[in-house]
Figure 1: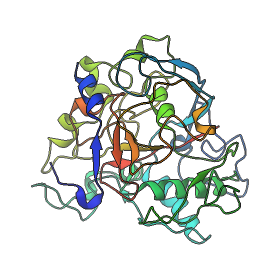
Figure 2: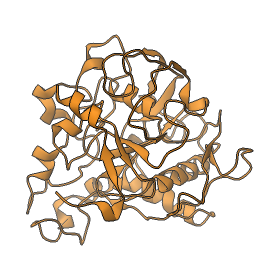
Figure 3: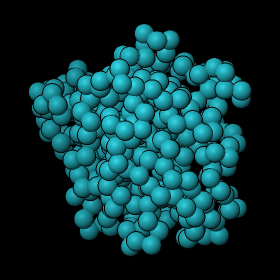
Figure 4: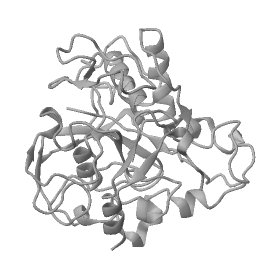
Length: 346
């Protein structure tokens, strides 16, 4: 598989890997209730802006993998998560709106992967006619860094008539509108109580991937919605998306929602593309009890660091990397052909 250092270093948490081996419409995201700007009519189909409500509450820890480890209790507020990974069409629609309103991005993003004009190990030039226009638009956006994702979240919030979440200062006087290739010169501060869009915390992401119900059998599944025996029905991963190279249409990132969803009605939480989370990455998880991590300075993760969390695995990897417990990381200025994101909101 490819060397990806030119797109930004990343790594996998060894402890998680070892362990893995052994519709409510949201205002703006759903296009109906909750505060959409009445002057905005999204071209992106409402289907791809839908969200799922998750109850949150106290999540007891068990085992040694993921963030809900033995001896730790995390209490989450209710939140809503996008049903699908952010599609290329939605990304581009908000991106184009934002560019004329003071927003700048380090990367313009790509339409899934492969994308028109690209090539990969022996596959040759990608033929965009292998996908219909609608399928291409519904593939996840890739090749965007962490800063691009949070700046885009702010633009999506403003476009939808919501309050942005990310600011450059602790007084919340300046909305973060500029992505950066130098993470040492820019600050991102999350505003408590803002009703706009944001990246999920790592705890929110894993809670959602496990189905959002700690009492259900699916909570303990290895993958989002399933165990290994039905994996191909739920996950785009190397055996059905990387190994059929050359002229196969099945190679690469797929239109979102084309596999079976998990118990919460969320799609592609395992596989297709990795998903950015808000947290700084640390190899060890603090076992202290945590309440409402997202609004308490996000103690679900460390206060600082060098890398941000990515979760879920991708089409490029085999099953052991696509579990609900694997913890991954990227430099916040890194980007990759198998890395995207999805949004959450209150």
